[in-house]
Length: 300
Image (tube, rainbow, N blue to C red; front, side):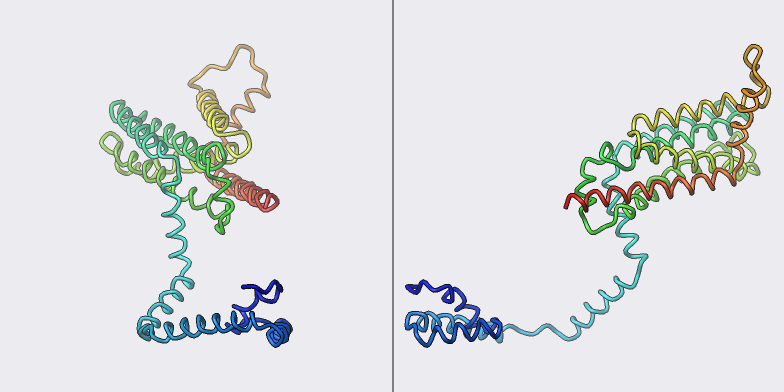
C-alpha cells in the first residue's frame, strides 16, 4: 500500500461494511481521489467475497441439536442445585489434602481408644475428639496462609462468599460424617439407645468450635487459630471437671473465679446457644470473606 493516509487503514472495514456512517463517507471521498486505495479496496472486496462464499458452503447445524443445546443451557441456568453441585465439586481439590487424611486418622484413633476404654468413658472420648477435628479442619479452610491461590480465586466471577460457604459445606460435612461414623463405631461398648444422645453431645460443640476456629483463622492466621481453639476446648474440660466435682478447686479460690468456670462449662452444654453462636460466627466469616472481595476490586 503506497497511500499514507490514515483512511487507507480503514479499507478492510469499509469492504466488510462495518464502518460507521461518518467514517464510511470519509473513506468514500478519499477513494474518489486515490487510485492506490481503489486498487487496495478491490483486493479487500475479493477477500470479503471469498469469506462469504466459504461461509455459505458450511452446513447449518441441525435444528434438533440447536434446540437441545438451548434447552440444556436453560436448564443449567434455571437449576441452582446444579450450580451448587458444580461449585462444591470444584472446591474439593482446592482444600488442603492433609485435612482429609488427618481428620480421618484422628477420628479413627479416637474411636479405637473409646472402644478399648469401654463404658461411659467411651462416649466422652468421642465427644472430646469430634469438635477438635472439625475446628482444625475449618481453621485450614480459607485464607492466603491456607490457600496460596486465594487472590487468583477472588479475581474470578465466583464470589468469595460462595467459595467460603462451598468449602465449609464440604469440610464440615466430611467431619460430620466422620463423627457419626465414630459414634456408630462405639455401639459395641455403648447401648444403642444412647446413640442419639452421644451425637448431640458433640454436634453443638463441634458447630461452635469449628465456626470460631474459622473466624480466628481469617483474623490471626491458621496456626494461631488452631492453638486458640484447642486451648478453649481444654479449658472447657477443666471447667467441666470442676463443675461436676471431679476436680478440686484451686487453693482458696475466689467465688467469682469459680462462678466463671462453672458458667463457662455450662456454655458448652447449652445446645441452642452454641448453635446460635455458631450461626453468628458463620455470618462474621462470610462478612470477612466479602472484605477480601472488595480489596481485590480496589486493586483492579
